Image (cartoon, rainbow, N blue to C red; front, side, top):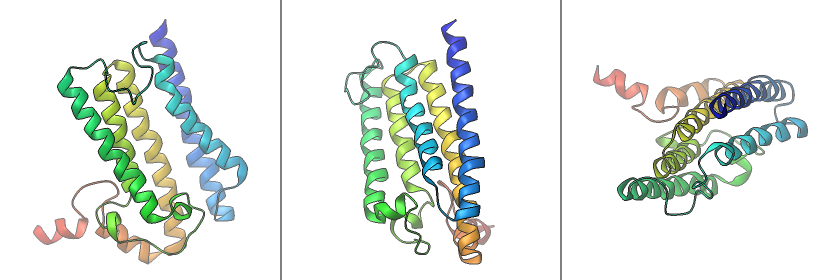
Length: 196
């Protein structure tokens, strides 16, 4: 019975996230060029639901993700802790470098192509994903795996919506940036074409 509830709530949260990012956020960006208060609250609700998810479904030994003693063997715990630290630095370091106003979409002043944005168009998301992977390594379970997949889907929908918005604002300049820098990680398209 518990697995069925997990699956049902995961599907409902994913459906809610899809509707929020691919309908409401998209509409606000298209019609207002920024998020309204209701849409911002809905977006925040997606992340509150997402980050509450493991505490509802994971085993009792999952009380706090920052606790060093997870249920995995010590080598996985150390690897997980290392990924959490790297992800924290990548996510929050990038946000601090970028500026909080730009990081949260309040300030739109051109395309940032320097620093971590030379490597990835979404370094904060990569940092967040490293943290989630680190947590999953420390407390491996089917529930944690579902949580990891959910993060990827939710954030991908958010990124797709933001990219549409940035393309509308910056047009060819943003398209050129996208052709030079990968969405997440990988070899930029121009580098691939040059080596072929």
